[in-house]
Length: 295
Image (tube, rainbow, N blue to C red; front, side):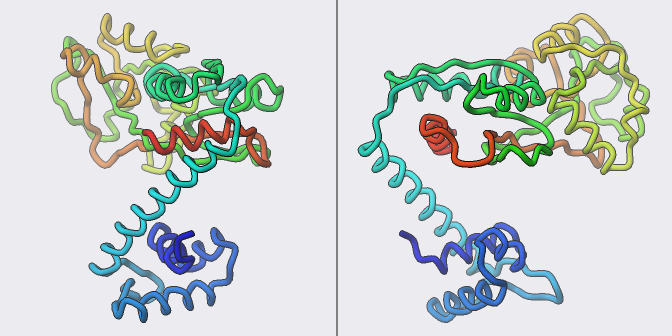
């Protein structure tokens, strides 16, 4: 087990906040300070610069953070491999994934998982994030992988990977006069959007509001229920759409679609595993560990 003081440091390095680190570790803020001080004394260095109420990593602290990250990643892999020796891996795992994840991200992970655990039968269901949550409560799936804003307190969410949503259009779009636009120009563009309940739609609206743009001012020409439908529509029209970078790799490389930069706007999101509060089923936990270690 890695030195707990190192875990305390790594948590503070991630949050850059002693109080938040204390909450995550279920210890007091003075205890966090004590562990950091002991680690600094042990190495004879200063790990954080403290200015007023803000902290940042020193050059030495950043080096320790990188090594700590590697230590914890290796420990996770060790723990994963040893648990495999103790537990039987057979049965059926039902996974529900929102559209972008199901179509463009998770299939390679499923293939690698099946090679490693051929006795586990995998069933993948594709739905939007809201329907995934309903399926978890109905018991029709064991594990969800969703995008968007996580609000349901009866579910637990574990970060899986980062994604970016970008504005795209056909390279043949006759409306296109520049590859960068101002945020206010969005209201002039005819947009194709996902349906209500889509995690992609939710995160777009939320980010626009935070950036000072009211989503009701968007000129939505049509709403479609899948990313593939949106991409095909773009190829045959002069419209625009917000799509995950993972979903447009083929079209970008073949010069069918192009990205339009928006000044002062970045739409980033975390894709998350989700399951009902409590301990996940053994096969679900196995898949979470495997996928997290093999991104």
